[in-house]
Length: 497
Image (cartoon, rainbow, N blue to C red; front, side, top):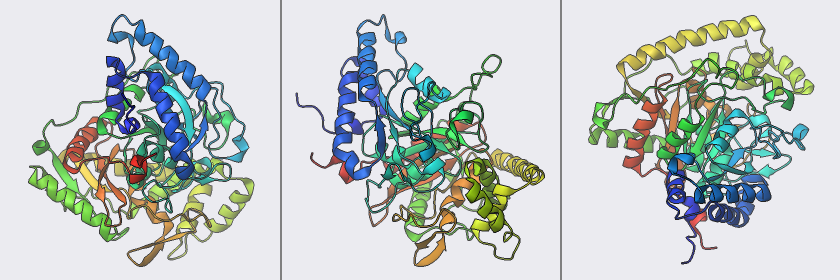
């Protein structure tokens, strides 16, 4: 029988089931992915490091374990699945750089706890995926590995900072991926590249081993706002991976355990859905707005109750007043001395009327600890408002970004660039508005593709649930996936070899 050329586009759940039935070996699947990388990666540039020899040994061991198993209980839920990992996450024995030249030759001796969980569940780690320097952009490029292209349109990016991860999943070069998200770095690439992604509630998945400014502290500290989260080709995959990854950090596991509550409802009709589909603070493009409205209408016709006027009593402006300053503070250790000096100078402009986003970000980066404490206090006030909102509603639907994937632009930085959306020039930082608004208050959010723009670019939706009710977001995401069709491969992924 001829091998299936599109095998790698199957969901991780399906692939795991085939391995457990003996219909597919780990070695066969690994070689399939290595072949797809050889064929597709020159165009996409998503996978930046491969350790094929170690992976082949691990895959052979997985197949040997399958052959000598007493029963299925001897196999982990990810048994034999080859996977890549975002290059911001420490991976034992494999170059892990954070996209920064300072770590160009860094090879960790220990896995990040999340990577260890994947291996313990049976996954075969064989490579690393591209990202911006220190995960600090909504595009994925750096001086070492170059630019990752969006498989739907190679002149555009797949988002950042887990852009290489999303692109690899989209074109079927890996079973699934593990990314990170502080301002939208799982959710934006899922939206731009047309895959599924889950940003868990803050603290649900250990984020030790995050390479965001230097290797020495990665194993000891967890960044504020940041989370690790999975990217995959189906919501079922996200659920499977959350089950594997969720839990306390190793130092807390002595006394703590984690049990996420079940989804609030089992039927679509039971869900009370709020739909915040646009906002004057960060207007959504016509193409994206049309697909979001189409989704809301489809959910109503399918029996869900959708309230388009419901709001949590929080203005989207809070993302600039509270969220971005908190995120800027959390990412400030990555700034060089020269960058820090420029930030100090720029911060002086933040109190002027109409201050640019760069000045707001600069002030957040260089703020005093007292200022941060006051922002954190404000965050907790807002979190209580969100909790009250979710007493009346089960789910919030909102945009991932105001636009679909945009053309490459590597001039300047995250806060000095601009974008043109529906003919209007907008600050580049608007890319982060909708995702940062959800992330800084620690809420879980699942992204599912909901369709293509007239120009053929994928669009996703954020499905936001109450804190620690990740399973509610994922359950509702299944209904959205069934309604819209969810993941579809880009033409590049199915083109003849």
